[in-house]
Length: 603
Image (cartoon, rainbow, N blue to C red; front, side, top):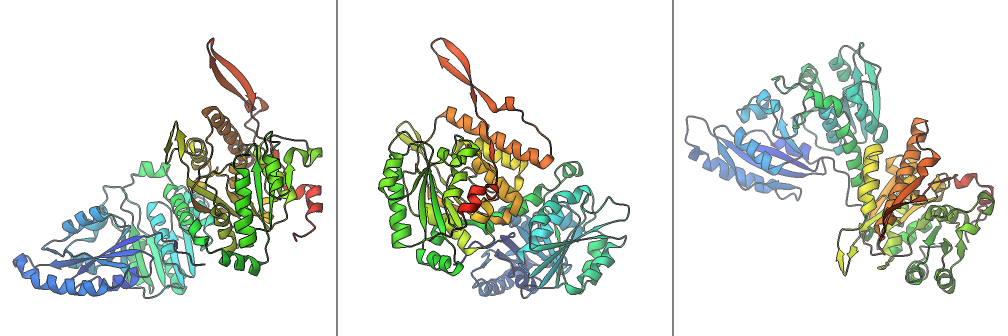
């Protein structure tokens, strides 16, 4: 199954194509990126001639650009810049186009555009890459010397965009610097490098960084480095290391400088912000899918057979008599009888008082009341406990959970979140996301749902687990995982179960083990504000429990588990205390009943 959303950290490149001058070699290099390339024709007229004399050159240049424009990735601007000093016009164009990267040939472009190196790099109009040499095919090895800061982070983006077989990050410090990896400019970037498996990081101590890089670069085809961070008032452009590498390195050299002005005081306080963004952007591009990518169900069935895996669908329910029957009927018809993707469907009920269990039994699926399972451990209320115990009563290698209150039920809610697990063995956990209309009176607001997600869950993840900030809907009820990962996870009994699982999988397996799928639109019964407040309270508890384990100290006491709800009636306001405690369940692999029961394979 082909993926169309390959990672492209650099999505747009602009190249000034000077008549009878530089630009052609840069196109070869730019084509090695998965990026849209814009060519801007430039005709430079000598100052002692009329600009009209550039007309013939402009016609010739348009003809040349049309030829290159036959490549679907290349767009040629129809308007040619004809000027004595084209840099100002080019800078204005860059502000309008806002490319991710401006490609310039080192030295030759400056002469051709009648601009100095310092003029370009002291206040660059956007992120700039100075290229010496050219790349005509995907390189086997890329070396990225990194110190930290926005320029090093840009170098990493450019290096990853080449999709080479090997990327080596070399962090160099001087002998009188702090220990390797502990210096401030590198801390945030180091967190990212540890998460990106494509990059091998090496540490070195030397007084002569340029000589060390030249030695290390003998096995590399490309060197990418950020320029030295300078105060805004400085006229220094590249720094001694970059200057020497551009002169002496046998490999192609790309020196990059960020167009974002970053005063030193702000820079010191925001170390790693851009670096985390690189990690999240990379993950989002690589691991975000659409349900339609997996709608060829025969392909999923074939993949499932090739891998020899079994798949269970567990349906948590509490008083869902209006929708549970339709959910079961559709999944049995489409994903068991028509296409054998699912091997079993079970209902995990939370002691419903309506006809939910009766309807499910009538549809021929096993029904369990989760409070009656593992009685020796004591019953607990909450969806999280139901999900945890569903591991006990299912046999599949992959376990899928979807809520049973979905009004617009469709098979994509299941096959969509199965797909990433079948096409990528590294993925351990898949979350669904969707548009969630909110009913207000008799009207539906298209994007009004997911209030706890946006007001509680995502802000907390951004604050404490920024690598998970790209997860669109961490609280969605549609998700799936490999049994081997889920049985080792800690489950929270209530509303915190989704947040806890997401953090647990991330901490155990890394960000690349998580995927997400766009399931289009989900219509369900929205909850009132008080219920959302309780949900938020439980999620906050869950995040703090995870942080307690990270930092090895307790923060929450039992007294913090009670929530004072504000009531109002004709007599006025009052307080009502309700216990909303998020308790952990141990990894299921530690429960003897589970180990014994799962010795038998699913038929």
